[in-house]
Amino acid sequence: MIPANSHFTDYVFTYTTDGLPFKAGVDTSFDGVLAPEPATWAVLLTGLCLAWNPTPAQMTTIESDEAAAGGGTMHRLSVAFIFAAAIGFAGATASAQQQTPRPKGVVSFGVDQTIADIGMLEWAPLSLQGLPPGAEIAILRGDLAKGGGEILLRTPPKYVVPNHSHTSDEVYVWLKGQFTYVAADGTRQRISAPAYISLPGQTPHALECGDEPCIFYLHYSRPFDLQVHAMPAQRQ
Image 1 (cartoon, one colour):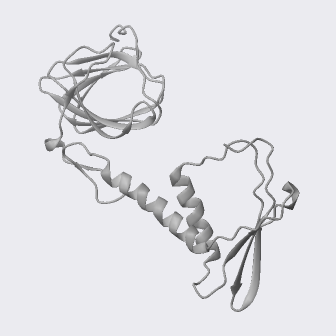
Image 2 (spheres, one colour):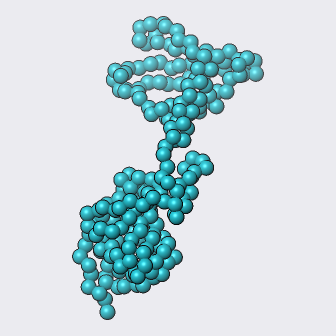
Image 3 (cartoon, one colour):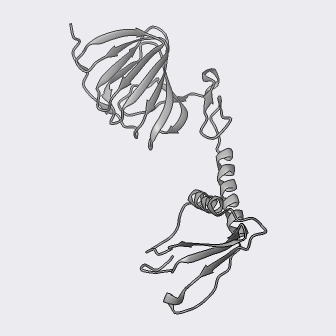
């Protein structure tokens, strides 16, 4: 905890570059608590190291002038410490990412990569107020509660997703099965997989699976919610 209204005068970084002295001042005045996330520290410290890039042969010091605080205390830190801290934080972050468990059937070969074998995925019953039982879900990536979630849904034959809407926009990619799309005005459109549907937020619609199981992909850019509406009268 750092008291509010604290003021630390400029740090001055001094080292030689091509044999010539060089100084760079950084204003570190702030109020309140200073508590960045570890990943943020790693980015900041790595950025500092890359910007200054002193060699081992170069003189490295950090001088802190605290005259405004009533003292003349000198603090000397090696830039090597900054390098070590940056590497340590970055390594810890990478290690945490590697240890994150992935669903069965999903692999990754790098940061933010998702490769899913749909035939190997584990399905879980989908229990959601407003939806009839029988649908199953498989999470691909992201968090539906936070936005950006990507999922697969599987339904039995003749399953009906009632007329509903979401705050978020949504994208469907229908992978298997015939289905009927029911628009807000009651218009019905029969479609066979593969098919693509893109809807803005607050667009009422219903879905009726055909005579075989249906599988479709869904993506929501915003946090997931579900509003169920009365089924519209069929439009002639």
